[in-house]
Each structure stands twice: as structure tokens, then as C-alpha cells.
Amino acid sequence: MDIVSRIRINVQASIDAKISLLADTEALTEFGAAVEAVIACYRNGGRIYIAGNGGSAADAQHLAAEFVSKLARERDALPAEALTVDSSILTAIGNDYGFEHVFSRQLAGKACGNDIFLGISTSGQSPNILQALAQCRAMSIPSIVFCGRDGGKARELAMYAVVVPGTATSTIQELHIVLAHTLCECVEAAIFGE
Image 1 (cartoon, rainbow, N blue to C red):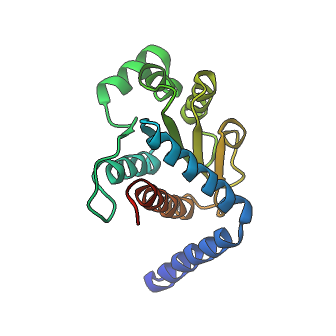
Image 2: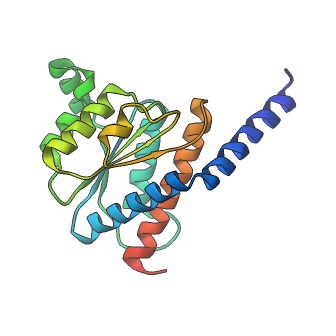
């Protein structure tokens, strides 16, 4: 396949997935409820913790940066932390307890009742995201998951599960970043005004 054909196929797949998301009332309603939960977290003095693996780890850092710095307007900083960036914590927990606990152990040590957790998993099956969601339940901390495919086990564990259409990891990740930017935009508008 030539390069031009490949880009046409990939752009069309992205467009098709976005159109499917627009028609998915259940996913959009769930996303709206998740956004309201993040707004409530910030209004109550909490912070958002975000985690994912691979490209989703980069998305977690990307979203944390949008909250702490800004998305597109001048405003006060909002507290957010990606649980994917501290190599000493990640390697200590991974070595001592296993990689599946690298996020749940951090939540146990950092999170409190006013906080919220957002896990990003294209499959909804990432063991460390599942453990983090279980930790949130144990601590009565609201949790959100952005996932794809059928939502996996994460769909059952998260308080809010936003399952986007698509089977290709790349397409799912593209939709996740649209959700992340929209989440931040909505929070900015709610906390600081339009």
C-alpha cells in the first residue's frame, strides 16, 4: 500500500470513529457525568490523579499538564498529577510489589476523599489500571476510565466508564485525547467562567 492510501485509510478510520462516538448517547452521557465529577472534585479542593501505560501514559502526562498549566486561556493552576512519571516510585513499587500495583500503591499513599482518579486503557484490561480502580473503590474515591473495545474489566470497576468506538489502539487513543481536551475545557469553563 502506498503512503497516500495509508493516510487516507487512517484519517477515514479516525473520522468514522468520531462520528460513531457522536452517535453514542450512552458514552456521551457517561462522559458528561465524569466531567461533572471532576468539577465537583475541584470545587471541593481535590486533585485529579491520572494514569495509563505506553501511549496512554503520555496522555496522562499531557492531561495533567493541561490542568496545571492551562489548556487555552489564562487561569489559576488546577492540581493534577500523572502517576506515570516518578521513576523511583515506579521501580520501587514494581520491584517490591509487582508492576500491577504501580498506580494503586501511589493512590493509597497520596489520594484522599476529595480527589478523583482517571485511568486510561485502550483495552480496559490493563492490570495496573484495574488495581488502581479497585483501590479507588476501597478508599471511596471516585474513578473514571477512558477505554475502548468492549471496556474490559475496567468498565465494571470504574464509577464512570467512557468506552469509545474502534478496535485499533491508535484510533482509540485519538478519541481519548479528544475526551481529555474536552474534559479540561469543560472544567476550565465551570471553575473559571466562560
